[in-house]
Length: 126
Image (cartoon, rainbow, N blue to C red; front, side):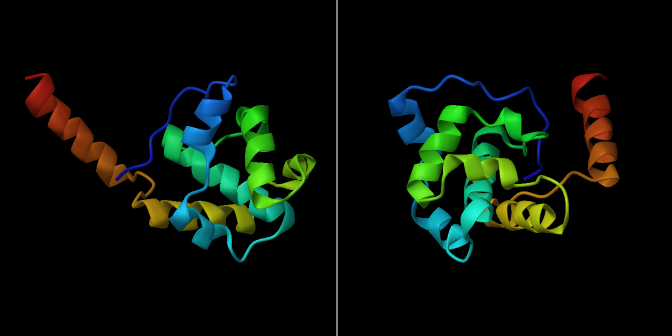
């Protein structure tokens, strides 16, 4: 699958919605198992954000505060540690790569864009 770009994730979540959408499940725990502190929390939030949005956040503030608190409680890391996580650099790049691979996604390429344009020209706009 190809990673998509979209609008921001909504910021208000009920308890039931947090449970249904932001809970780390079996396979998720294997991915966060060897991480600790802000890295553990940041990875968990990136993982769930990507599952919901099909993209990664551009800035930490895109992640709903309620989700930060909820996931922080799950991974036993203070929610305030999320501010220490950075979305740039080798660690964040590696985390995005791990998440894409685990979920079967990859970044789009120029070849993908050309194939899409060709398909649109033939199938949608003849």
